Amino acid sequence: MLERLNSLLAKIFLIIFIIGTGNLAYSEENKAEFLKNNWSFDGIFGTFDRASLQRGYQVYQEVCAGCHSVQHLSYRNLSEKGGPEFLPEEAKAIAAQFEVTDGPNEDGEMFTRPGRLSDKFVKPFPNVKAAAAANGGAYPPDMSVLAKARKGGADYIYSLLMGYEEAPAGYELDDGVYYNKYMPGNKIKMAEPISDGIVEYMDGTETTKAQISKDVTAFLVWAADPHLESRHRMGFKVFFFLIILLTMVYLSKQKVWSRFSSKREKEEEEAFDKAERAVTEYEGEDPKTFK
Image (cartoon, rainbow, N blue to C red):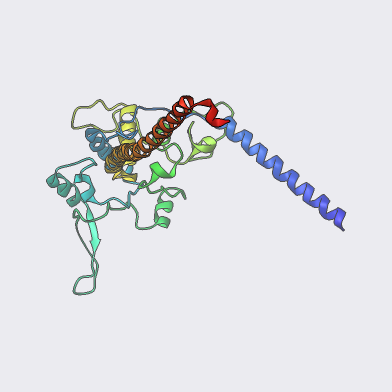
């Protein structure tokens, strides 16, 4: 019985090992290094490009908002410091473009009204099932924390938007599935969303696929971390404070220990002088005294 159990466990471990190594080899084979960008928000001194964030919001609204939500953002965030920094009047006008369900009223009925700054971004679908049903069974993920939820962050989102290609020869794709170089497994149900000229920027910036992808990526990074700049400023202040504190501690330590050093040196000098006087007195004595 014990032998049969050991044999069964050995077979199970063998199957797990084969599957694990096979998946690892497959993932390594299909792993592509993300495209790199010099993001302005990287590093301890990083800040967002306001113009890029405003363009990125435009791309989100015109291209992405039909399927993807950003449920953790409010319209007031668009005018707050550290973000796109639209003027308050502009942010109010943006919010007012959307119909928000509110209520109940005095009759106990729900009603719709124009959006306000305090409202969350309006979702494209009322619930997850409705979103999946409208997209062939695939639920479009919320983009509020996408940049933090995916390994690679900004580079992942940018690479994914730029990674649509024709499938290699012999690579089979189901209907409604597309080939993407940077998607795990290289299969994605979202059709290529970005192309040259798909939006028209009001500031005259050239609307290439790379520029549009970069702008909407910056917007999604800000959406995932609206307080990034304030955290960077706080981190710098803390770092500067620690430098001052360490300097003061070092100087205090030097001052305290200098007293002990002076005292020790004085004691050593006194001991040396005493020994020297003893030697001098000994040399001056009559040798017969010590017989």
